[in-house]
Length: 351
Image 1 (cartoon, rainbow, N blue to C red):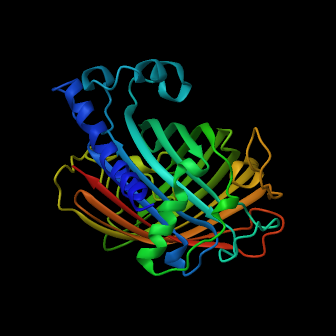
Image 2 (image 1 turned 30 degrees about the vertical axis):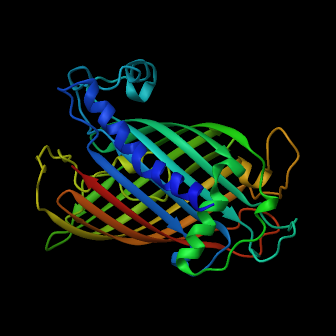
Image 3 (image 1 turned 90 degrees about the horizontal axis):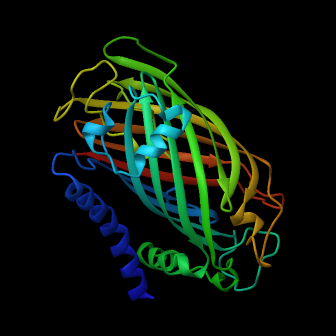
């Protein structure tokens, strides 16, 4: 178990770096993948250990550029930019991202080895994601393709047991009941706007960032919408903070070129702000609750309407941003007798 966990951690740390180096090798003239984002979500931060127990996602992304040809984006991206309606405008600034991540789910009672039929299944998901992103003015579009695996070969059991050992938490004993191996594929689309923003006094700023999106695949099928309110000093000219979801990871601390055209590369600009957001989803499918697609497995009756309420604080200085947030998620299945609460840390580095 220790060997498997060590290998998994090594993969999670090295793969994004290899991707970045490969992109540089393809074109010496190209500006390489220059933004790294790390998301850590865990119910340990909220003092619980049930339901959605944790998530990890790391992303490397390119800067947003207007002229994609001169910028030398990867060759396979050009057909995508020319075919999708919200990416077709050549005047829009475009970017590409690569991500790797893991998600872990457990029932409320992790002490028993028996199958708990009225609680969510044990499940672990590992995935690799490729995203293309486009923005113009005060709007950003993201399209992401996720490929992954659910089941024992996600090695979520090993990773969680290692994490519990490090933190001194109780070990989860029911992993023999986890969902079976199944390859996953899904397409995720989301758009975000800065519809209102302004100055109050003493560099105190505010903005409102609604979003609209959806995903389709054997991992999940849903449509979502919501909005974020930010209030603070020297707000970054990006598109806010969100839990692990496609597209947010392409935000640098402060964009190298902000929305007013000011070059902020290498700037020592400082900012701190508070944020609060809500996201509502209409869920048609969730493999972590509905069970495996092509074989019999543990499952529960999911709720169709689910909402997240998030509040937190963000600190940004120059090319670095850090956020801490607290997320409350409504019940996701009919027999759930607890609400999901977890904390999230995110780190953004713009090189």
